[in-house]
Figure 1 (cartoon, rainbow, N blue to C red):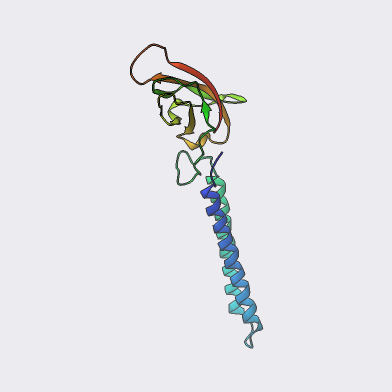
Figure 2: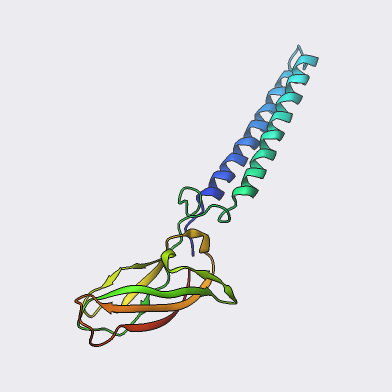
Length: 176
């Protein structure tokens, strides 16, 4: 799940500006045409040049939008891509001690075993569960993986250094 995409909103505003500029050109030309002097050859040439300029700007904006895309090619830049929301809350059994959350192995995209998220691209909210804490969320660090369901394992390790009981391993499936 993602928040509103800033890049798409920016592209929409640019398209609206081009439409408004073209409308202004046509209204100005119509007003000149209705005046006593009329729309002379110089004004017509200026109108055509201005419309062709807007057309070229519009084509360039479309190409930029296709290249940038809402997610693809944007890498982990938060300036270009909307920030994905964390997963739904994941519930684990409570324990009387704090536990650190870590991803164990890559998370595999459902339906495509070859598409995986490296553990370095996964974060947790909170990073450490308090005593008797039962819920956490998984978040992406690299937003290029947003928009799919993944399955993987989360390891909950005691933060006090005790080795008994051993770390708890939870299999999870999340939408990111």
